[in-house]
Image (tube, rainbow, N blue to C red; front, side, top):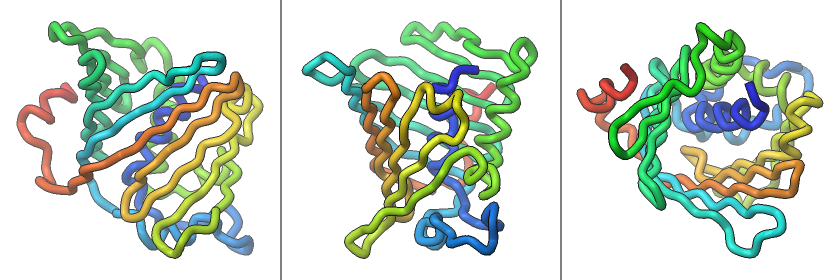
Length: 212
């Protein structure tokens, strides 16, 4: 499983992390304390996203936008609308891509690549508020704000992740609103989330079918 996919899964899971549980070292200051008190604890979240990727050596960034559905008990449906329609469905056991013509392809199957279960276990642990998993994988540093919301920087602890990413910056309030990924090769990806909604609180028939 690539480090890039690991961090992407982590960010998707982070969207609805319920911040509860104990920090890895209860005697140390909790860098997630401010976010812990603000981020929504919801089983289902929908919203839109816009992504801008600045590739090192190129002047113009690559842009895309779309929407997502994150269900804590199911996974994530990540639908890109522009510039080209496509869809990625991430569950505990597989990652499936769907194209504009409706065709689907299994990108990663947990039966063939057991590492997927390990990666997804981390994402779902994060979504269930396992703070030890977060502080074990990343060094977390909170940043000052204007009194509203929260900001933090995550630095990978493992050499494998550090070979792909130098840092992940997050900012938000009740939800994660902004994500910035700085890659070791100089590329920078910025994600912005908007239009977040917790209702309806259950998946529609169409949404549920996308996880099948």
